[in-house]
Image (cartoon, rainbow, N blue to C red; front, side):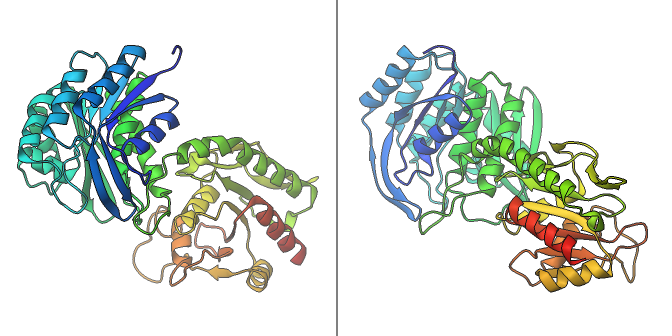
Length: 447
């Protein structure tokens, strides 16, 4: 094996494929790192729960780790489910002379709150394995067990990282902090510094395997040579996308989507090409009547988009000229603000919405979109109180949120008649670039 980074996962299996060694290997390979494994336990489980567990003998566990490390230049390793004191001791002995970074995911407490390790095994974990760890990644219940603390806020999380670090690991990442109903907070302590990572809390039950996935992502980043804070920051983005686009498979809580980022990267070229083709069509077909003073723009999101860097739009928008409608610049990722944020806001409610446009609004356009499309009008003006900032009332996200009041489906059109200093505008949404093109041309013909 030459010319490729290698990571090792030492963990139990999940026959449902969402957690454990299966999740680790998917995650490691999604980072472009070659994944190797040592199996510690076999579980019979699915999205509803665990039905049976059988541990692998310690001799075979040691033999697996030895076989991998004897043959491969392992760049980093991680541990997951180590279900007994004997297994923890075996793993600790097997990796103690290795020089690669070691990420320890201390699987100690089930999602139900049940303790998974006996007191003896917890002691061995603290005394034998944690001191060898480059990073340990407990969630809040596990951090509470390791420290004996009640952890209720970010200050408690910071205190817990310091307490756990006293057991010997180089760095500690406490995950899963709920500081309010909208935000998740993770706290990393490394090299005498503390870093806080905040993510929006996703309204989903499809989070199975999230702990395995973030620790495997960090291990893969370390295998590629990343420094600790950068490795964790990348893993935070990776798990955020994987949770946002979790997989609704099985009849219980589904797994996170380990390959969402990989598929998203693969779709970027097609996304860019779709916008180029859409722009060429609009330039050929005389849609002058749809172009507002600020310019018309179209946008297409990648299938697992997270922010405006995952949305392609026209740099400088399309404008009316003496020769017809023309794009000022080329389609690019991350170039748009308004139409991209409108599209991303719509996708918070429905991931199947992938394309959007902002067009001129007057009475004729309002009448046409109302007759032809599922359209909602929103009011950008305030009848009382101080004006709010652009990030609140009047913003693209605000307009979509107002339109979604008492609705389940994203409207095909959301329009407002403007406000002081703000041009009236109509936003079109579609499930594909082709459908958006059809709607734009139909609207241009109608007016």
